[in-house]
Amino acid sequence: MEEVDKQLALRIITLFSGAVKGMALYPESHPAIRQPLLELDRLFGSALVRGADIAWGIIDGTMFFGKHLFITPTTAIADLTSRLTEKEIDRIVMSGGLTFDELQEFVRLLSGKSAGFDELRARVRQKEIRHILVERRKDAPLPKKPDDSGDEDSDGHALVAYGQALGAIRGICRDIEHGRIPSSAGVIGAVDRLVGITLREPSTLLGLSMIKDYDNYTFNHCVNVGVLAISLGAALGLDAENIKEVGIAGQLHDIGKTLIPKELLNKPGKLSSAEFHEMKRHPELGARIIQEMGGLNPRIAQAVLGHHLHYNRNGYPEWARSLDYDRMIDIIAIADTYDASTTLRAYQRSLTPRAALAVMQKLAGTILSDDLVVRFTELMGKYPVGTLVRLDNNEVALVHRPNPLDEEAPVVRIVLERDGSRLQPLREKRLVEPDGSSYARIVAEVDPLLKNIDVGSLIN
Image 1 (cartoon, rainbow, N blue to C red):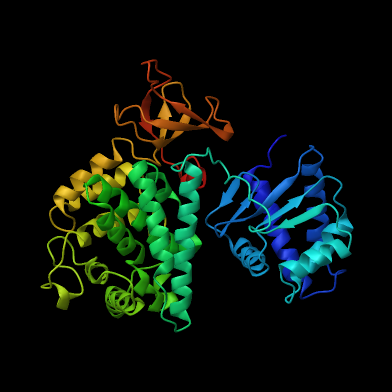
Image 2 (cartoon, rainbow, N blue to C red):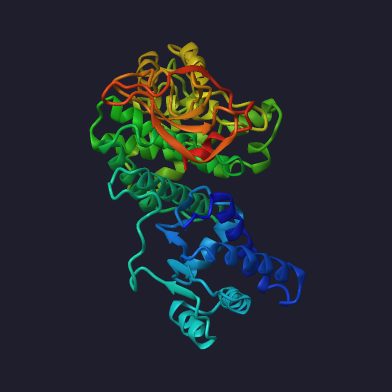
């Protein structure tokens, strides 16, 4: 069977989410309900005619559709994920023969607020919806995670762990915004999984740091800094507990921004002196939140307090410059600078990974620790994961994994064919095979903006 591609999967989930939400607001004959249902009926009909069922739902808090994971959810996906979680639904299976009436009735049932899983499943049977099956984890085993090869260090596991980390940060921010003291359990569990993956396969997480969500910058930036800090900590030879603590500090380093006015965080131009003074409060606010959370080593709050102090300790907050700090704050500063530099913002064009490393090398010894910049550059390699490159056969490829034996020949995913046509799905290639045979060599770096390529969307 030909798989539903990711764009179509996203379209189906978005329509489904809108129909469920709209069903509670409008009569069924209203265009806001009728049109999405008609298009869903057409899309499901087209997909199911290929002869296999369509399975979709939630794995570890992350929406999946077939083989696709949506680890940076849109508002529509987040709304539908919450709805399915509320009703304890882990998986929905659509089968051939699905009718418009069944689809409409199922959307109506999902839009109801009172029905739990058992009641919902009973109503599905009562309404004779024969071509839609709902399952929850304790009733039936979920399928393998999308793209899961069965190995614990697979890309699929890494993506799911990244999604869990995003969920943990969102939950903490939500609690703070509602005046609640957040729990540390979610972020501890998420970082535990990320550290485990890194210790088994050190390069697995590096590509995840190129996942960007410009509408939810703070969430993604926090997780990316945690991922990079974990990778650098492992490269430095830290033990598992210290890697875990540096990862938690990385993920929580900007949590104080939750208490900074959003109009200030999202301001496109340069901040005024007063606005910058307000922004500079976020390390202190973050440290205070972490102290209240409990269950975290005090050095994590200390690292969050000092992550803008700079290597020469001339940064902010000024009053905290003379306090005792360990190397964790300099590790966080490296990860923070790299992710911020490679992210497109309203006031900043993003740098390519190689350009970001070049900027960091200029900051070494003052803003950033010089020896950590050297080690981080070695970790990322000549062509860091997430770099878009042109090969000598004129294909354009994304660097997917470093090659520790030959930094000139990383593992890549071909994005554009020789004639410039877009590949879907991407084709993974070793530039040099273990037997020494060569597929191609890198001749140049390519600016993804010039090719209109979103590197982050290719990682997952």
